[in-house]
Amino acid sequence: MPPRTPDARETLKRLEWTVLRRLDGIMQGDYRTLFRGAGLDLAELREYQLGDDVRAIDWNVTARMDTPYVRQFLEDREITMWFLLDMSPSVDFGAAGRTKRDLLVDFVTVMARLLTRHGNRIGAVLFSGAGQRIIPAAGGTGHVVRLVAEMQNAPRLPRSPRTDLGSLIAASFQALARRSFVFLVSDFLSVTGWDRALALLAQRHEVLAVRLSDPAEWKLPDVGSVVLADAETGEQILVDTHDRRFRARFSEASARRRSETSSLLKRAGVEELSLSTDGDLAHDIVRAAAERKRRRGAQAFRAARPGAGARKEMA
Image (cartoon, rainbow, N blue to C red; front, side, top):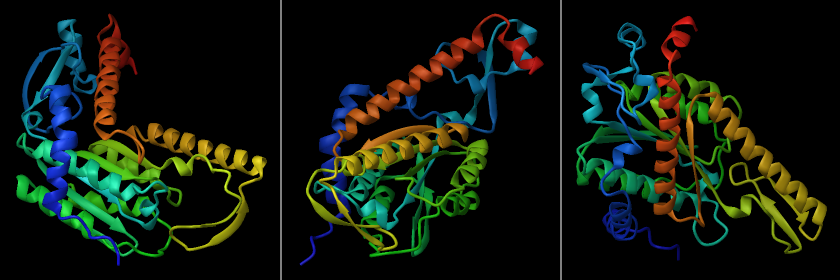
């Protein structure tokens, strides 16, 4: 008998106790450090403060006033968040009792509950080999429960065509009518070309790539002869894990793929958050918030140095 799918409300309650309460204690409500809106309606101009987003600097005003000024938008007070979710068969992999899909559900549930209880709206695009499903943006606990149920009940396909993240991203263009903060949650095991669509998405929206992984994808254990199967196509291959050179080549190929994915994300102008099935979700979210704050502070410091405005105008 297959294991019972948890009830969406049970999942939400479990994560409120195990993750959200820890985040409340650590971050003390400062969630906007990680998620800042990027609105369209200009509300005011004000003098730059350390930690402001360098992209909000108004260079014309800065040049005239000889001190950095930033634009503040009405929408900055309310963020519309979208989750682009890769639910393809490869996310059903997990070697230690927890799959990447489990990790995806937990992460999205935590973020959705955290954001909606602060008055924000969330929507989602679920992508699998069976097609796409769009959940329009809305707020409230009931909407979070609906999203959790949709993720938990998404079909687990035994096989499918190879994942095309470019199609998932392209499908989101029409759904995201207004500027939003977008989470792209995937293991990035996809056919090539998705980085071009992602770069176009990042021109309009603020995007955070959430990369899912499992330790068994990085390093093979020495367990003798085993059959490895492609989670999507079903293609199988017999390998001898006693062979130390084969295990080394596997680890090198895995490291190379992770490095290439990070390079593509950076080239597309997208920040990355890495999550592992053996990790601590609350710790990883806090780490991402700290790194994001540090990066933005460094960008703002460089932009505020004397002559920065002039250099920008010349560029």
